[in-house]
Length: 328
Length: 274
Image (cartoon, rainbow over all chains, first blue to last red; front, side, top):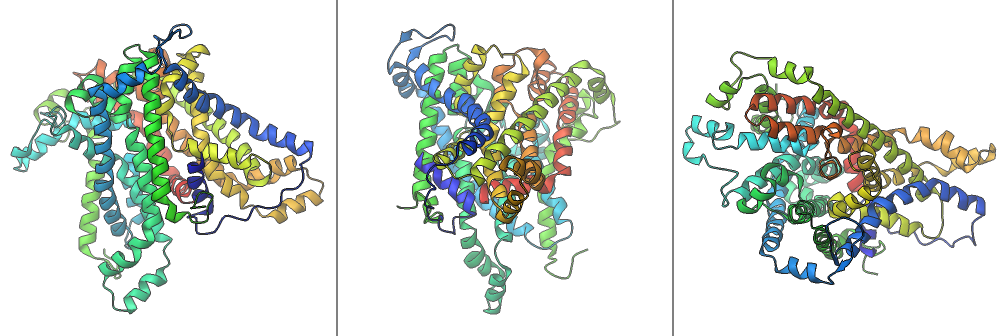
């Protein structure tokens, strides 16, 4: 859990600029009345969290050692067999590969676009607030609606190909969803459309925290607009970008909704868009193999955890010097 | 129309194209609902000619849509109350009490922020099944409250910590207990934070897909996202009606969002940046 402290403290200290407060000498024991208050106030939340978040994760580790159809208590202990099957299954390898591609492509595509859009929207202009609302709309609409709309528009005889043909780009018209060479890029297009607003809003908020004196000083020194953005804005936006990248990576590793809605469990694997989460649902719940599904959940959890810890240790670390895990 | 300062026309062109791209698919859904299937087949990207309203009126006259609106509303409202209520109590403890284990408690909730329900969904389903809550709304609501707590607590703790200690001391002098202080001072002072976290919980519940997909198998208990999907596969030949159903189902989230846009954006950026 040490790693999670980093995010916690970052969040609490607002960028981790301030060093963590020195541990106060703890008063010797607190009165039972205060203990009771603590228990009454935080008990319900802790019980809910332990019961519906922590307990299921622990149970997944337990069920993962069994071959089990989900009825009655699991009895058929198979040790690490489920894990051996997962690690040997080419379908899982493909899903893992897709997750990796989505992680990298999300960062490479969404990051620069979002920085560009945030720079654009950071200009003073009329209707700025309405533009900010509009760019955020796809983020607020549910995945089901986004998936339904895009899968209708992207059919071979759908609106996208129709528009392409009508503006003379008919040679670009493609089978966007079923063509295995294209489908992953189609998914990236939809993901970018859906989640770019979140990145833009974050970056805009980060930019508005940068003191205006800095760019004014740069202008006085003769820096052009682009030089100022490159040398002043971007470096100061670093912490925001790194936190966004972290959230993006975690989201991409656990991607499920859009893929499952647009491609479904069977098409996703033939079109080359399956993810670890869709593999988990298809091979676990939908196939009735709950022991196996739980083992996949454990693998997904461990991979996410590992990447989160490595990222926090090596990337977020510079933002959290002085925080609990900041190199001490 | 450009302001004298930095009113570069290229910026406006870029912004207009951007808005077009972002809104295109949304408009496609809404406008498509006003067309007929033959219009959609012959000219997939065209405008309605003539405009037909029967798709929308059919959906609105049907019972299915309203039942799902009801289910989604119940789930979202109770989830919101639960998340905000439990969240503010736990945040108060984390923000204003010093006790052993506080750091661990905070770290646990913060760790929950990194793991959405996806990783726990399979065992969660088994747990809900063992509790006999499959095909019931509480089966969706309880886990949603639990998974909503991390965001809420991360947003609220700094908020509550910022309440000046002097107010607490003044309350103590006036014979107000710490619980009384929580009830009479902390809750009223933290209303903006409660609204932000409440809206986040509401919109998340409204849009939630994976959890209802596992828990709710009975059409009677479907929430809107499941309903949209079921409708889309049931009427897969009736594209216009699917579009009408879909666009009606996104109205509440859009209305909610445009009313509270500042707070949602502020809350999200606050949760990430502190």
